[in-house]
Length: 135
Image 1 (cartoon, one colour):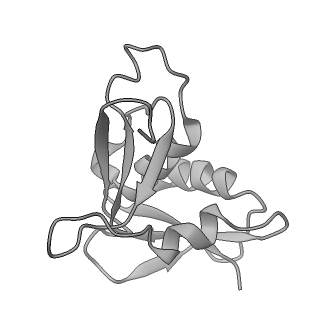
Image 2: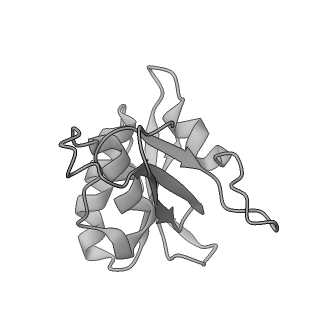
């Protein structure tokens, strides 16, 4: 399979989706996946503190038939962005449309933006951290 074994989903709340990883990643001594860990922690405040191991697959929310959909543009625009792009960090309560952007700050690295956003999220308990391309 895509993740090299039995899959385990980590649910992403904002934007909605899932990250699939190998459920035996720790026991199999697969390498830590810092990028998938940052993404899951940012999108799901309830999951923070966990660690993901091995390859990961990001998908969108399930459809009305229970099937995974393609990863939302909110993820693909950031994760597939070319070198040289700049990013903003926003905070959003899960299931709320309102976002709070950190004014005047931009990042050149998407995963640095996720990591810094998570550090800053300590001041916003329960908020999802979103990284978005700068206009």
